[in-house]
Length: 319
Image 1 (tube, rainbow, N blue to C red):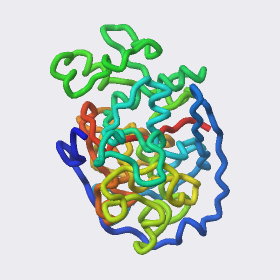
Image 2 (image 1 turned 45 degrees about the vertical axis):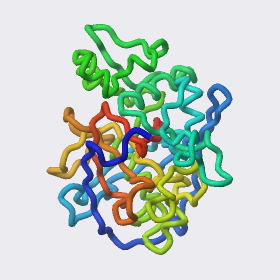
Image 3 (image 1 turned 30 degrees about the vertical axis):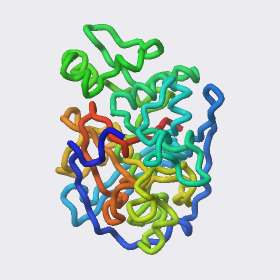
């Protein structure tokens, strides 16, 4: 593994939360759609539309209670796995690769079904476009370099900006930071921060994805206390009320949005965050963190060019 989570990262942590019911009691019947690419299947779960739903916590300036309206959308049942990444990108950059004692999977778990990590934000959006193209869907992202849109179908992995690449190709990196998203397209994309948090709640007011009871968190998430400080095969623990696994813990998950403090309530339908910034949002916490810091409302900020061994993502799309 090359980096630990907190090198160069900004962590905004919250330990409170509103009281609520366990997600198991939420009156929700998850529905989804399964896709297959190069022999690897994955499922997208439908999240029902919401009007004036409440996100955040009132006592925290970094994520105060605010309202959101979202049309129905889909989000990955699990984090993107190493096998799915391999099927789309043709490589596996993960630090938890099973090659030694420190990185091997827990007993009985499949290496290929652990979440992919050690990828940066640029690589995550490239994956979304490449996956869309492989399945005959419309890519959501456009990156224009010197007046010409990048052809994601033929884009090699080593031409996607990385930490090393940054100092050598500043012009190209600026172009990737200016990426645009068309959320009317039918392809895959990163969830907006609002979509991610609403899905994590699972139809219930709970501090963690699946439960509001700290004594039950081991049933729903991999964290510092039960993970042995390593990632785990997806779908090994219980899902939240929407049928989503590992929304809390395992690996942190990139969102689309630039990171910024909330200065006012955002009520726009499909609000996708600030127009610009220097860091991108990630959510959900990881195996290296204590339970109080994996709150469904916690927000993290990361440089989009940097990769970490506890950083992954899940994908979203339109219903």
